[in-house]
Length: 487
Image 1 (cartoon, rainbow, N blue to C red):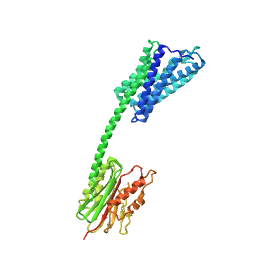
Image 2: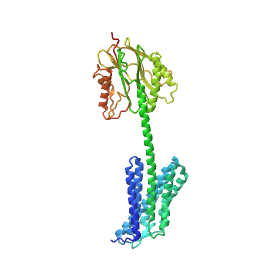
Image 3: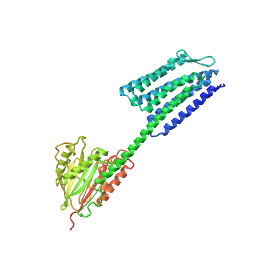
Image 4: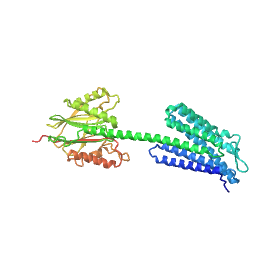
């Protein structure tokens, strides 16, 4: 079998080779753009694959046109069918892209989406039926290609898609970037101009050059827009990260974090830590002297995470501290704090709080619990156990709540451990929780240690349990040791 390659076919061959090369480079570019959404990458992978298929089969048909032989005849019918099918699929894909870029309302999107799918299916049915009956094209005894009387029908569906594209570009022009809109118009118009030109150029297929050129230009415009969006997102991300880092520093600075906290006081030792799950957290602890003989201890956990919880946390901490410094009892502090927060809590956030006031001269601890975790108490026998105190309702959950308090008599050497639910609810990769039993085991591994060492032991035990699993919640702990008056 001998292929006859004319000058015109040679020019077309150059066009098709250049077109395949350009489309291939475009595919490499889209595959290398890892920051572009997977759906966008897949779209252009399919889009350029159909263009390559279209122009390849188009040229293959021309090269084999007029070559005798039954095998060539079968090949001609196959490549011509694939050529027309890929042309219709390409029209469908570009219509989907224009529809998506138009940002139309849901009703319009649904309507056009269904119509485009129907047109594509009808196009495939037309080609399948016409192939058998030679309605659109046929090959004579010498295997020369001829258009049949119903050839125009083969373009009805792609032409209908084209009309739909024009309607979308005109109707939703304001929703489409001007440069992208121009690229769409070029893609729709360029093949028509190419067909008009090639009718006077003795078979040179300018439509291949026009289709590929317009497609690559449209692709480059879209990628440029996506890259610009990505760059802006990265700038916003960097700015947000910087702001969150600053917010984290501000939040950490608001909490007591210099140790020893009260080096001049011998009656007690206190140590606390907070490790937020995100840059900023909703947990907080606090400790401060109300007066020379009373130490206020606070452990709290705000609902939610991130920036909203952090803002609510800072407001709650200030309100609690202001009420405590007025000399109020723990029950009254929580009652008044709840009233203040409920008076302006449109977001309906809440905070669980354990608050105690330790009288340093006697060791008497007066405390109240607003829906917080049970504290762990180490009595004189030297082992931490949960102190199952009575809970009141969470702060900010309901107006008019009254809170009750209780008393614990601490003896010199006894300790209390306070924490948020991030400790017992720390989760490993298999979604198993750390739990209070493991927490008590960690506490009792060195119960006679100083508060700082006790907290580090608990944190080490949590880290060993969760291993590589992501931290789900804030981890906040506080340990105070009562030592009493020194003679």
